[in-house]
Amino acid sequence: AAGLLYKYRGSVKLGQIERFNSSLNLEDFDQSSFWVRIKNLELLPLKAFYLLGPYILYCDIRNPGFGHNDLLNYITADQPRFEPNLHPNQTMIHELSCHTIKKKYVWVIDIVSQIIFSDSASVSFEILLSKSKEKLHSFLKVDHQNHFIKNGLLTIVKQDTFDLWNLPLPIKEKPLHLVLLTHGLHSNVSADMYYIKEQIDKTSSKTGENLIVRGYPGNICKTERGIKYLGSRMAEYIIKDILPNHLNIDKISFIGHSLGGLVQTFSIAYIENNYPWFFKKIKPVNFITLASPLLGILNIDQPSYINIALSSGMVGKTGMDLGLKLTELNSTTPLLYLLPTGPAHRILKKFKNRTIYANAINDGIVPLRTSGLFFLDYDKITIPSFKPLQSAVSSWIFPQNPVILDDKSNIPILENSSINSGIELPKASMIESAASILFLPLPSKKYLMDPKSRENCIIHDEYYTEEIVNELLKKLNEKKKILKENQKKTKKLEKTIALKWHKGMTWRKVLVKLKPDAHNNIIVRRRFSNAYGWLVVDHLVNNHFQNDY
Image (tube, rainbow, N blue to C red; front, side, top):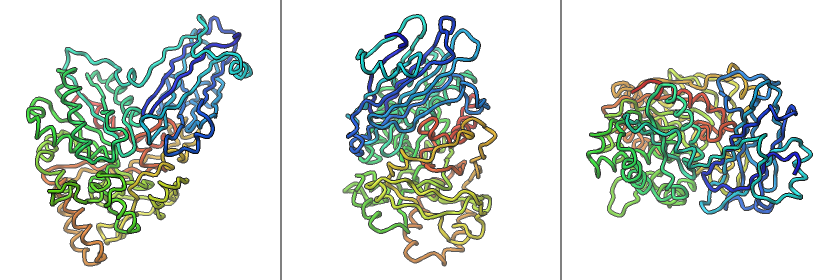
């Protein structure tokens, strides 16, 4: 097949990534560009089977030297390309320029599964690299090989999910820092939190810290089974799978997104209760949550049928846990009420850093009240005006474009804050909207290529001691008479849980202002389509892994 440089057919399941590191030898290549074609090989009718997949791919192509903090030239070949949702029978075609004078030109191509609901479904794909655009189509008709490479011109190094998560290799002779990442509801750690892992790895390579980043893959498609189930499995993974293979671990950090913040907290309690030697041997360093419902998700102002759905177990025990309901027959107290006490509290106090990142707006899943641990000094916060958020249940059953909040005007929340006046911040829905994950507003080309065009998304970064929280509590108690009668019971329970989290501990609270979908942008679920979260991950990495702890 004249003109064909490379052909490969493969497939990816939930949470899987396939990376193709392509290196073109320009000394033997007499053209100014070559072409890449990626096709989703699934049949078009599968596009309708949304809840069985979805059978969609995310793809991006970039220079390996790409750095989101570097200014890129609009007319050079350094521009990244990406397709956020490659549907069944759709193709992505791009020209890769080779005009720069050098011996080799290298591109990195990532193909990522967008499957959410099934751990058995897979998406088949084909990738072609050719000297011309016209040849891409002719190869499909005549060449049915699974794998083809033309020697001499092109070198391809393919990496799968296992390769990416087990590199770089740690130094066995040096003390090792273990960083655990934990995913949220209907999510996965291997693809959805890979960007965070990659950024931590890059920083450790500069600082020289001996560090590995891991995540437990065994909870995918099981996130409705309850926080105790998920947390105990993750704890056993740490003790029985990671520790025996890395006996030099002397420090540990936890980073949890959404539900993952609660799961990692239970894991800490489980380890302390069942393996009390662990935290005597291994030093806790960072405890970090991103958009985590630490006080549960029971929205006072949302339709009653949503709360009923949560309480009755629409998303299993996890929904009941988050709805502050009893999930054990012999229990008299909600799990989230007990979580920040006892063994978990003892170990949380030992962490060098306790940081929570919370979305101020555009998070249709976790409200600021619960992700920010209730007590916030709104006198120091300026955030955009709000519009009502969409219903969760309807967006779950009938996926549609998410409601976008107006972020053009900034209104200081002073006398109108929930602490100062009793007026609530907008309520968010609990059940994750699949539409907001896959069909989100994309960053502009200017945002991706010009760091100076990006507005600082950090709108609040303060330390909250127990004394500061008590002062805020006093302000709240002075205003409680104006709270609606039907809000008092729920508010009292949330307030009590929040006080337990703050007892004897200082928390760093970082509030961020992101564009939709903020809940997944905050972790940069996909490198370019969720790029609005780049600065949040930068803040996390620079403030927790920049120095050798």
